[in-house]
Length: 102
Image (tube, rainbow, N blue to C red; front, side, top):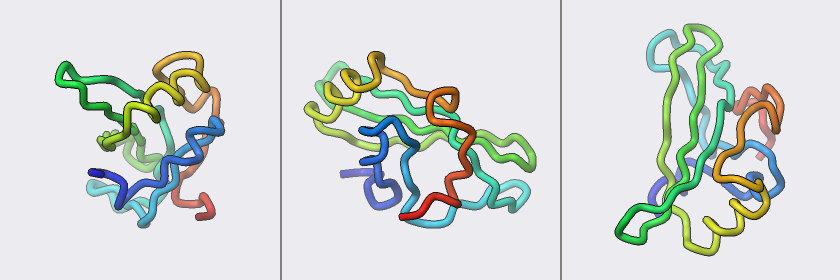
């Protein structure tokens, strides 16, 4: 599934930020201080389910978004666990994703 080669989304099922499978570096300033901003699930009209992960560079404030394909079951399970379709840093904490153990 698209995006799974870069992201481990299992922590989201425990209200924790997703873990990158590779080290992420800001394309603008080169900083590796990349922080989790939020994650949101949604369903496209054609029945495809998606997870959008937003990140922010601490060095220059550049914001990036990653799209990850998810299953219908994952979509409903995340909405149930989160109690909404979105989770953000106020829930999981101000976390530098490159420092997450994985």
